[in-house]
Length: 322
Image (cartoon, rainbow, N blue to C red):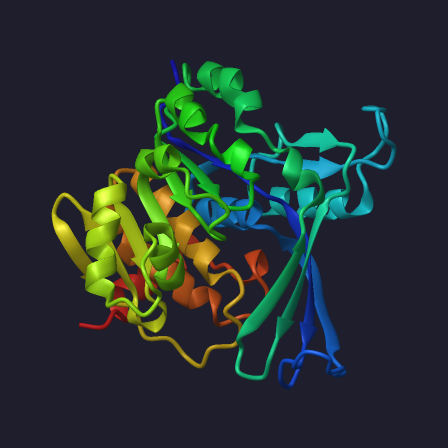
């Protein structure tokens, strides 16, 4: 008998994050003294895969890391790859199909100020070699035995590789959830294939080509013209779902003082994908996703700050704003 439990496929980046704490961000030309903090798993692909897995859904990550010797597949993974894969496995993510490359494992350097805001610098490394087209046959084969209702991807692939995402989703028989963060491409065919397109307020303005000062309702209307559906995250105000039912506002649950916003958007996206994969409507899934994103701000770090699916459901049920 075939296993009918769903699998979320995530195609994206793996980084190792290094955090630096600052009292305040430096201005150009200024030197400040920081405090080195955590070092651990990061990258939008890895983070979102962890968030999906935490919701109790089997999650398969298609990504790339580095190895210690070029052109020799028998050589061990580089130290950062070993760290990342170990953490992914501890979070329950399927790492079986992560590729080894001749480029170093990606890194991100994250500066947090006293208010919890962050600035992030990424060196992509092996992530630039992650090509969805290379995995089409794999997902087609796997989807013959397991339902794969969602393929989730982000803006950290190269634009040329991002253009292959609709074909990957089609091979899996899946909806393409596309979090264009950052907005590395405005390929109209790719944007039109997203169902939903997931963006924050600034990214939503950028992808539609309007001013960032444009009222949000006008941006929602513009998004409806270019994508099948969209979800816009609105920070402390929650999120908005734009689909055939119009615009649905989803308030954020109330949480304690924000510690670190790093990875909150990724917690949102992974939770959204997992909830839809298990049968929730887009609006229902968004309610869970805003709870997951809010909870991720309560601890430092990205994937390491994510809570269990039960905690997400409890917060969504008991502490949502009305």
